[in-house]
Amino acid sequence: MDNLKITVFQGYLYWENIDRNLQNIELRLSNIREKTNLIILPEMFNTGFSMEAEKLAEPMGGKTMKWMQKIARQYACVITGSLIIKENDKFYNRLIWMRPDSTYVFYDKRHLFALGKEHETYTPGNKKLIVELNGWNICPMICYDLRFPVWLRNVDAEYDLLLIVANWPERRIAHWRALILARAIENQSYVIGVNRVGHDGNEVYHSGDSTCIDPNGNVVYYKRDEEDMYTFTIIADEVKKTRRALPFLKDMDAFDINTI
Image (cartoon, rainbow, N blue to C red; front, side, top):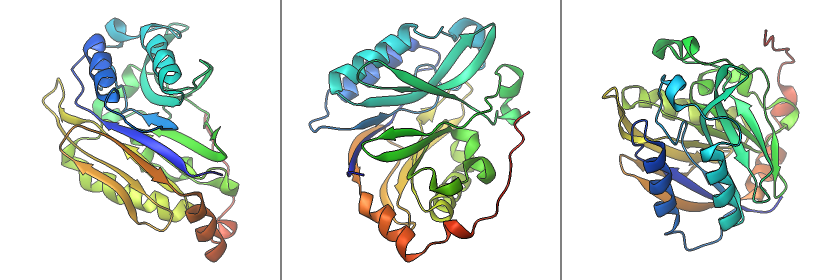
């Protein structure tokens, strides 16, 4: 594992306006002055957290994925975030992991936010995704997944970095902060949570509170209320030292997950 340069975008998302969101992100990215390995965007970064899948969904390989391919190529890095995808007459809140060579993998949000009726529009995923980047094993998840520690559990130390892309409202932001901290400590991994800011189309306010926590629970990055495009480094030795000094993962309980 090498140290990893991470760029996070805590953005204001223009409600259901794909072109404007992509233009804004591209403008903010143009201010990056250092090499990065990974750009992380929020949940549904091109639309906001909308249930209007019929009018907003794109096919695999659609406009937004082509844009992601262009950005990954331009910055010679991976770019990731979730968007609304239609496939086989079903809608998914799908995270795309786009590499600079235009190859990609994806993760479909497992836990759909019933309080917001997400489950009435979207189809849940049933498989975790673990990807490799510069020697790091990375597990990307989406927003509400954060509340379900069994789904996120670091079984057999399968990941070194847990990512959460989100549209998490300010009125429950204390939960966001507490759960990210808990996930980092219990899984002995870095955890990065990337949230949006501002009011959405339903007048729900999002304060951001995007953060990076190291395996010991220390804050590496934190930002509230403002749009922010920021690059920081996570340290490979922090993961190794923590797991060596405190070998707690080997004592975890064995379990199976039923994804039916």
